Length: 373
Ligand code: UD1
Image (cartoon, rainbow, N blue to C red; front, side, top):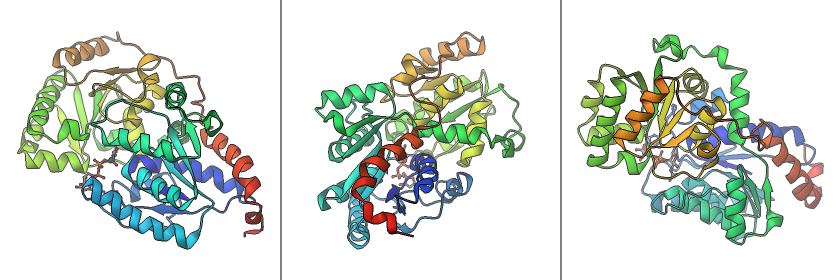
């Protein structure tokens, strides 16, 4: 039973479900959508673009405070698990849906697999860090995307038998998308020329939830957009906060910055691929820009994905205006680290490896499923 709830989850389950569908002799798969994200632009468009099958079960949980959202997912998911009795629950990433469903399954005694295990920012103010640590501590199969994850789990005392270094399923999707980018008309639609614009995505509570921080960000975007045209697909959370703090007008007024609604996966990958630079606070985008070899300035103080800084194109800049200005100038001069794509299994076959491992581990114990249609 796969679980997905929020936008980055959909990018991760797409290649997994595609791969597991090839093992129907052993696995009977189903998908539960928690409804953490529900707008068409945040959910439905990803199912269409990534060709994800419709969810078998929809929990329709929606947006709430952390406690209420987590509790609602747990209440609904427990009923699903009791009714359907899956042999294994597969959760991905670090959102509230990931942790809530892992907790339900573990308490009922159903095995849990966590895809993207072991990542740590060591920043307990991030809700995702709590979700990561809790989910990993409950999981029976921990699938790790980069070597730092192996070290973190070892230090936390997780038995090495549970841990599998498989690579990055997000990159599986990215490589898949590469074959379909011809369908995207996003550059024409937004009137952009290759390598003559930058992409902005900022939605973390630490960046967009306070007046002071939003104000700093508006100043930074003004500074950067004085040097290069910017495109900023607005996450609903950011839009709500900009309106609440009366700053949407200020951003709209920047003449070299274009605000858009959230984009589909293919359009966003195309937009990143052809951009000169990306300014973000997302987790997955740090990896995607490294794989695409596009310079990435991450507006955070830390990252749970250190390989992107050590080996890739990522630089942590926080909200340091001088550092950001310096990096942008260097990028525009062509003087910026282009990195190398991590050779450690970022090859588009992470999902294949996960299915292969689970086929031997779970398939052996679930021989009754072989008779399933
Ligand atoms: C969630 C994840 C975050 C991930 C992000 C990707 C957690 C704790 N956070 O953050 O790790 O990077 O998704 O997008 O799980 N909203 C809508 N429509 C939607 C979904 C949300 O309008 O379809 C609005 C709601 O007002 C909601 C707000 O956005 O209150 C935030 O949504 P929420 O799911 O709580 O967190 P994200 O910021 O999206």
